Image 1 (tube, one colour):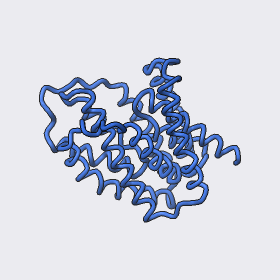
Image 2 (tube, helix red, strand yellow):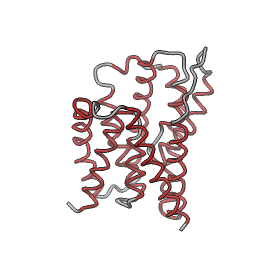
Image 3 (cartoon, one colour):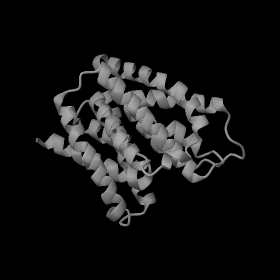
Length: 250
């Protein structure tokens, strides 16, 4: 195992810890830091992040948490988001082959925008959002899922504005992320040729994510407060996004 694979596995472990502590960030950490360090190509990193997100999502929904999800809003969102995942995957394949610098620049911009949006604290609405809000969110979330295996920002912002209990928000988001990751991973397996190196990292990464989630919950979460971990993650993401933007330009 060479140094780049060891570094990538370390990035996966870091993303698992940040995801466990803050509830977001796994895909962005893997793509952002992995892409900035050129550990693999962006399409390869996106597949790994998508596949390992299935492990994250399944562990988060374990124990019947999914029953608390807001299913009506989920179906509206998914009816739009799933086709847009296919569009995002097409763009990813096209840009990965013909315009790598554009793909790097897009990822850098997305990472910085996500960090900025995460600082916003949306006020809860007095009444639930209409269905078209979830459909519009599905457009952007589906594209981001297909491109960078990062569907979180649009739907997370919308869900945290809903006048529903936190458990409903969490169950809905985890369910959506799991279904999007499953759809994206399935499409990638059908339409792409997955290298042996990517298969190896995914194989090793799955138990690493499970072990990292358990260890983080059991031992590591008490070391730093979630807000501190979030600020550190934002700093790393902004730095990685800046590096990708510089590489895209120069």
